Image (cartoon, rainbow, N blue to C red; front, side, top):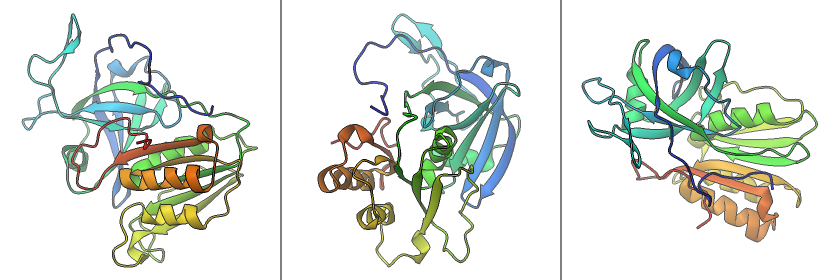
Length: 276
């Protein structure tokens, strides 16, 4: 197995309270992608996230107040009301600087996107986690990896985790046209990878999110022993998974899929593995 996932059997203990952190820096990576750096003493001892890990981001209310939980007999309780929460992939934790970097897609709707758009140094949030137990087999190769903007931080962590001996082809779907690649964020370098960008602005009318990644898998030359990881819109993830297993006949334990969001849903459920 190349990956194991949380929440699939076994009893969980009570989660520790979220860490109250503050924005210490912000950088616009592309027109639709912003990097926010969090810091604060509460981050001390933050576990080093595994590749493609996730955190829970608890947002302040409309008045800027951050509601804090208290420990109760059945876990965390929120006496002032549970805040808005969203799930993100941490880009990196720097233990020396005690900072946590998170990338946000600015999609114009939703509380987290709106918060990230206006976030400034000193703003407070709470962070729970990290979670996720993805284990990358150092002998696994070749890889076929695909994702849209929502998966870019996870994909960056995958590139950094791949051994130098591994080979991988990455298919990345973004909005910008190829001749004006504003959304082509700089990703880590690796001697054995190939990055292939697919731009929705260049696609035929009616193309839906994830269609270009599905088509890439259908058209690509994929080894029958390849390892596949894909993270994008939930409906497209299911089509990718179905094609990988039912048409390409890849071994089931070589295939890892994540539905990060779904068209028409404001808050897609966590832990969508695309297996239904």
